[in-house]
Length: 100
Figure 1 (spheres, rainbow, N blue to C red):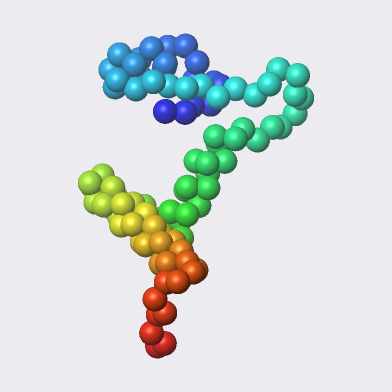
Figure 2 (tube, rainbow, N blue to C red):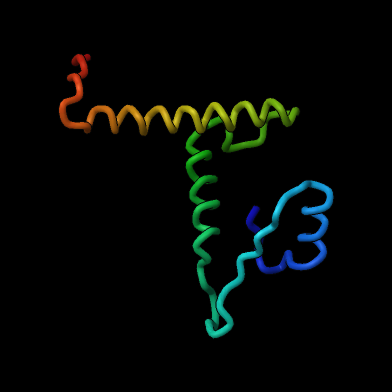
């Protein structure tokens, strides 16, 4: 699991002991002054942006966490299906899709 530089120390130990997770703290370089975008942070923010394309995830309407998890899975499955369908159409020699 990735975390910001402010989560060093006790949180790393706690996550390993109680959750069985390895917390990888991403830090910026010491020689950089000002703001620096960290590469792993972009991955997380981009994933959240993809999820927010689903209208139901824009606001937190769900009361139960298992319902929220199901909606997130549903959103990601929809995203993956769309991407696979585009790849299938772009592949040379693929069967033509019927016109609608």
